[in-house]
Amino acid sequence: MSPDLLWICSIAFIAVFIVLSLIAVVMRGIMMLFPDRKGKDDAAVIAALSTVLQTTYPGTRITKIEEAP
Amino acid sequence: MEELLRLLSQSGLAHVTLGNWVMYALSGLLVYLAIRYQYEPLLLIPIAFGIVLANFPLAQMGSYGDGIIALIYDSGIKTELLPPVIFLGVGVLTDFRPLLARPITFLLGAAAQLGIFIAAVTAAYVFGFTLKEAASIGIIGGADGPTTIFLTSQLAPHILGPVALCAYSYMSLVPIIQPPVLRLLTTKKERAIQMSEGSAVSKIAVILFPMCTGALASLLVPSSAPLIGMLMFGNLIRESGVTERLSKTAGGALIDTVTIFLGIVVGATMEAERFLNPQTLMILALGAVAFIFSTAGGILFGKVLNLVLPESKKINPCIGAAGVSAVPMAARVVQKFVSDDTDGQVNPLMAAMGPNVAGVIGSAVAAGVFLSLIG
Image 1 (tube, rainbow over the protein chains, first blue to last red):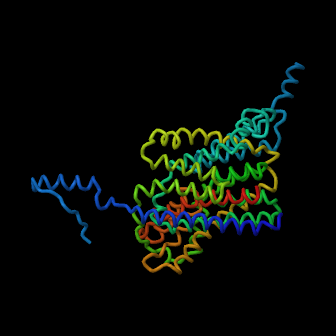
Image 2: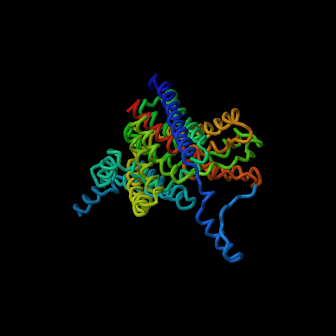
Image 3: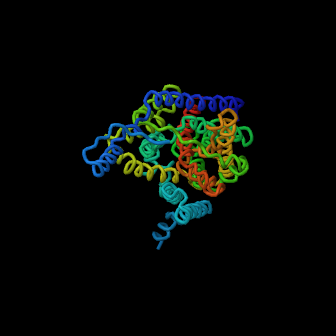
């Protein structure tokens, strides 16, 4: 038994929070800097839409894809 | 005839003790649980067989003897080699996107380490364990086998067997341990909280995550670097998209090979005279304390967060329970509990995977801090 253990555990618990919080903040920042653009220019979606459109209206070209609310 | 009698007297049979028979029975029980109920079979089967090997008198097959198992123990556990290699494979097999989609769930993963510290303090102050033993017992609450073995092999190798067995046994008992705690600490209204969808995660963020996490954790708590470093290395192999061969090996053949060695060596630490004592029962009791308080820590912190979060961002506190690691079982338990309770209306599996994988990082950091302060 050691009288220090309560103190060590408190420090350790706080340290776990600090490290994980820091990683969370850094990753939040990275995700803001590099947002996911898949929704806007997903090549697979464009290809699928183009194929359908070319079949229905040959010769047309897709210039903008918007998601209706 | 005299030679035959001498041979018989020198055989293992003549030296089998009651304790050995008890250990054979324990081994049989583990094999039964692994096969009948699928309780962590990949670990429990090798551990069970290791127990049998270690309890063959005169065979020198224990981890502390002079045979081949001791050779693996000395070169794989004492040197801290095997647990980090397992973490490499875990990194390859883990998708951190659910965590990155909701960065706030990092905090739930941290809060769910509460049981580690409650169990450690209880072990020292109530049961009289030494500081190093108490820390090793506490880490059971991290619900992470390799982390438990990593820390215990350095701080208190003499209790490695019961501590590791306890960790893996309770991990498989998560579906039994967690639901009552979830029911006790959450209201019907809280369980029905439908969380908003997480943010989309870009490929760049997914690739930068292992590098940033590895660097930050290793710089802040260097003693956690063997675990976190390998975990993140494995994850980078997975996410880079250009190292498929490495990824396949680390997440397949390598982790399986190391699991075999780790399991059998841990099992072989459990020789009857070392294992069958009141200390083992205390460790089993403390392991349950650790798991219960870790589950409670995650749930209660979820409730605290809801006090400050706006209505649209409220989280279902049940997902905090998944912060105990035990990937992915704890997240599945939360999903089943919430889904059953809400007649399938609320399904927080993906949200629960966030704290679940954060818990892996959290317990490794906790082990690193213990090593820094006590080791």
